[in-house]
Length: 176
Ligand code: S3P
Image 1: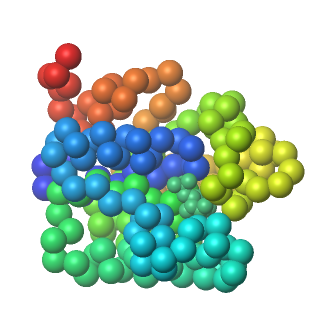
Image 2 (image 1 turned 90 degrees about the vertical axis):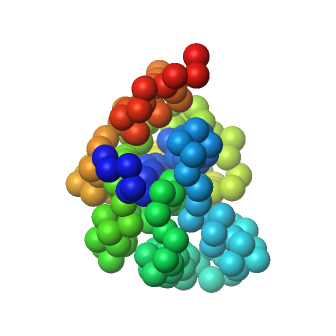
């Protein structure tokens, strides 16, 4: 990965994109941008509210708009992006992601995702019904796409964040 390139973290809800992204950004140091937070700030309402009032297709349009805005922004360099779990699934977004930087897929097992997401109330796609079933169904639709768009795949189960940092950046963790 070139030193100048932005890093983009993709992966299923709960895979650790935001936590890892903030960690990398703090330690590189790079700026950190979370596309969900960007949308929430811009819209002045939560993801749940956006889904409830305007539906998923509207949210997906916002995601594409954000990517385009970020690409047009002159200072989009040396940044770490965490993007919503469904963002790479929109066809139009995948070439935009590649243009934006080095795409890293944080791959996490279903069991681990269920553990992390079982009590979640912030993610409209997991609301109501059995969380495991929902994760399995969505992952089935998404996993090949995540793998295809990624420049690098990192299996996160059982790995600590410093190890993930080293794998993504290629830098040795020196602050032990
Ligand atoms: C979604 C993932 C969420 C958020 C929205 C939809 C998805 O982001 O964008 O709830 O379709 O997987 P995280 O992956 O950051 O949870």
